Amino acid sequence: MVDYNPKVLDFFKKSKNLGPLKNPDAVGEVGNLMCGDVMKAYLKVKKRGQKEYISDLKFETYGCLAALASSLALMKLVKGKTLENALKITAQDIIKTLGGLPAFKIHCSVLAHEALAEAIYSYYQKQKREIPEELEKRHQLILKTQEILKNKFKEFS
Image (tube, rainbow, N blue to C red; front, top):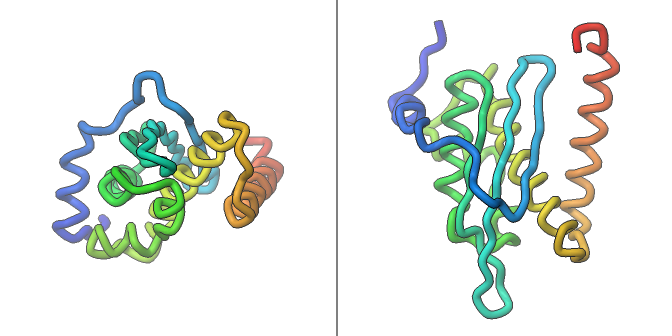
């Protein structure tokens, strides 16, 4: 049995706030074939002046308690932030917001982090905007990781 701290359990209890977002501006999907978790991040973006802000973010999360809590913690961290500032949030920030995660559940925070990055990447693509170099690197790494995992476990998929 996994021993989660009270903050993680509190975020999990709010998991009813998860689900698809109607008419999203972008969607990012990632998964971890090793644990089976899958996350979709739905993003709504609003402009104020020259800046673009995340007006809403929802997750569909298929995974464990830590995956659900990580999705909700990230939602709390990025709503209202500019896309640029949202990209600066790290998996460690998610873990800190949750008050910590067991070491073997750290990948849940990374998955949420990756789903957000993929949603922002998708938004930039749809808007035909230049994709920041760091975001492009993250996207390519996510694609490469997914391809390695698919090849390694192709008999199970």
